[in-house]
Image 1: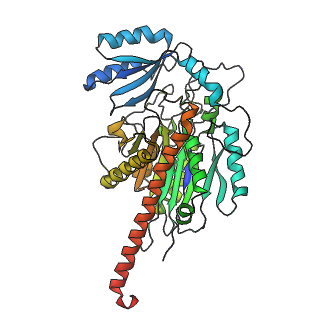
Image 2: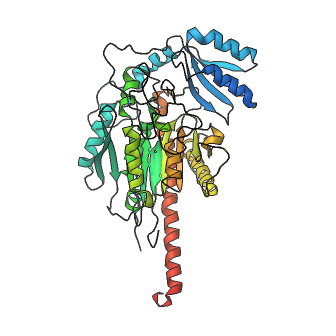
Image 3: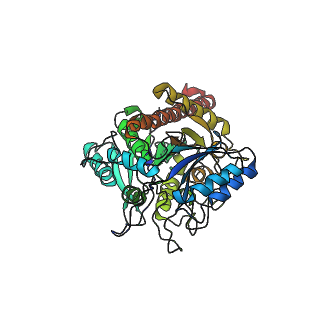
Length: 471
């Protein structure tokens, strides 16, 4: 019997950040309110709303935090200087809104001390609070020494500021024929890979590989935490490391992650210089070369969804691309971890009219992942395509993994919550939230293994029919 191993690459995509100078002031968001705005069913009303936001030109007075088509709401952070004009606009256009956070700056300040490191963890891991960049790297660097026959740590690339982009490979039986799971033909058996980030998954011939990337957006601190929790569970789950090869990148955007800790808690992009002297950063999840520059993106450097000067302009996205394509022929799954929204989403993101050829399977597995989360944590998620449940966006890692990498199982995990806390998820929700991600990924990995065993048995049966003397 052929034993397949899934290699899971857990890639935590974290936005890059240019080193903040000592003279740069920290953004406080004092007096900012977070409004939950009802999205009308009439497209022209939504267009009016989005035009007023005008985030393309000014991210200093308003920020669109989230938009959920399924729930029919959007969350917008509004500065005190813009609040009167914005609420007046909503009122005269009969657009319903409520204030969900009265002072965003106060909320960040009041939760910040408990969220962040109170002491330095040297090579250890915790989910009682968020870990800073140096703590995460210290933990990753210790793993190969603690688990020399299970874990391999390599530097897959470097961020725009020169920080290493670490790649974990986890498997108990190294083989170039194992299925690979990356977590952002012929007689060969197609093996799974899952990529987490965001999470993404992929398979290789005679080797299943699971590839994972998380943290594409700097402010989504729960994303790298979820990736590290997956790593911890894998180290204690021999079945999944014996039958799969896991590739995990917990911090794909270290520069932006650091910037969100030191200068701007809501920073989204990386920290690349742009053609604008006053605007920094590229949205890494709009920089992939699949329908690049289309819906839900911007070619203006000051936009939070800036696509970059060209597709794959950023070293972080090029690194992730190279890892994905290196093992594409044995990758079965790709998962990207984000927040927030409590949803398990599959392609496509760039459109609501096209469907993948295996849409039925994607939908079934997605709903089963939702059920696994509810059974374990008693919290409700939804499943569906990104474009239908949230909004259309292009140039994403998930669409690239599906459209170019042709990875069968591609999912984006949007973790807790649904908007009450948003990106400022309190520390008491870290453990249940990272467990949500693990329950979903564990189900997906077992599905990949089971599907591969069925395919192997079918191939063996067909071979016996051709060669009856083998029975």
